Length: 132
Image (cartoon, rainbow, N blue to C red; front, side):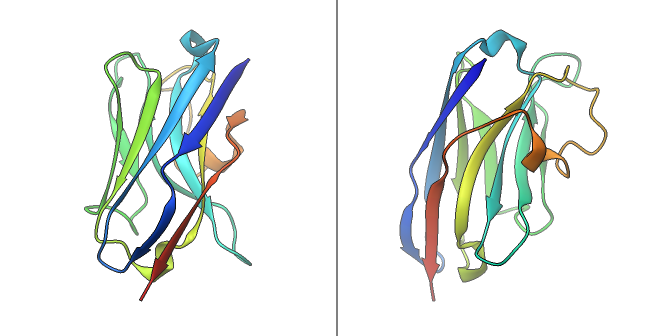
């Protein structure tokens, strides 16, 4: 089992920045992918950004088109904490943000961003609110 705990959400004005953190614990050696998805009220869950863990693509990141160039997904050196640096925030970025992880082997998932909301493990979420 893997446990995920997010932190760093909050309220910010448009154009501002926030950094989300996700601390992973438990059997983290099994993780092949980690990432972030979000859900706004009345909308579908949406994969935002993710990272391959280990394997030939280890460290490679992937992003939704809506956040490319503004958001950066990264890990600490120990590999237990995932970050999402969010810059140039827009009101449409307002949502609950969730950290997610799966024990699928790195490189085996087709469209890992698309299936991110369905990863095996997820945290409780942290709210991000962007005002205009």
